[in-house]
Image (tube, rainbow, N blue to C red):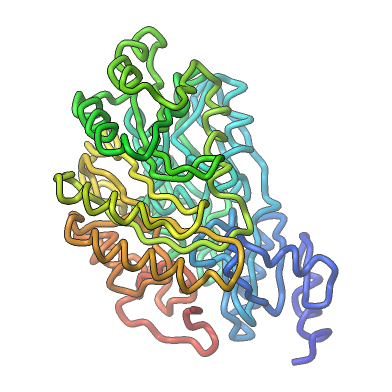
Length: 461
């Protein structure tokens, strides 16, 4: 099909912008956060609304095109863009409406957490969101949604009250407790397998000023600092969410640190954090009462767009001396200054929900171990990827067998299955119901029970 004919088949149906190879905007629009991803769709549609999404889906079906759906574009595997297919780009859809009385917000899928929080915090309200503010609200929520407020208010998906969805056959559906409740269940952690979510309604909570920031120590203190952190988190403080990191300082020295958010009263935070902050002396203690929006942007410097990224991540429930010793040994071999290892404490409200209440079913108090290499040039690919794989292999025996789907790269079907545990069978049945021929497969794919592989729509590497 010639390009002019190809584009004319959809142009008069689309309110948003269309970009094709050769257009001035094309190379910019096909970029995603991970600089390792370099794919070229046949056409990019910057949707202006749900109707545009519907026409994209129908057009792709008519022409046997694979479809990638981009919102924030933060998938480390680069699933927001494809080679040779149609890229549905939601990033221009940024409408948001807050109902202060009901403490709810309707947010279109193109919003980032920075944009979302900018609006909600002006009403003294927030919900659990990602810790990198350029992450899209939709992708993070549909995969579960670990974030600063999870101990107090649950995951982002736990606060998802309803969603507008365009399905693989072009239908508009509302997923809520009243309409299509099984679809809502699947969207609370099941990712982009069931349709294109164009708008999400969240429950909001009173949040304005939090006690947060970072405490930095030399790498030589990592073991003792983490043991102190474990003692602090063992107290069961829902208000306190902590991240432990092994990293490189601005001066090139090896460091460790704790990033934290306490969303309770300032006086209570001072008491709860006293022992952790008195450990040391620290290289720096930057913990203060700050606006929640400041906290949400605090770690953005650790994940700039355009670097090359490769990850492995899984959950660890018990930190033994052997596990910590192994981790520190591999951390000392980090291949680049940008590379970090992060432990995220999943706890509180996020861990108390029944495992079958949402598609995200990993409901226990544990730590997400994130082994995250980042670097600048392709000649470093081999050494950085090898370090991640070797570190992951060395730590695998200490894991609890579960993992977080939002941190998966392109790692195969078995790893996707491991992300859902006992909920996988139900998700497979719902995939069969809402997307029986696996039209939406450029994602962490849950294959339907009788996947009919469409020509040209297979997974991309």
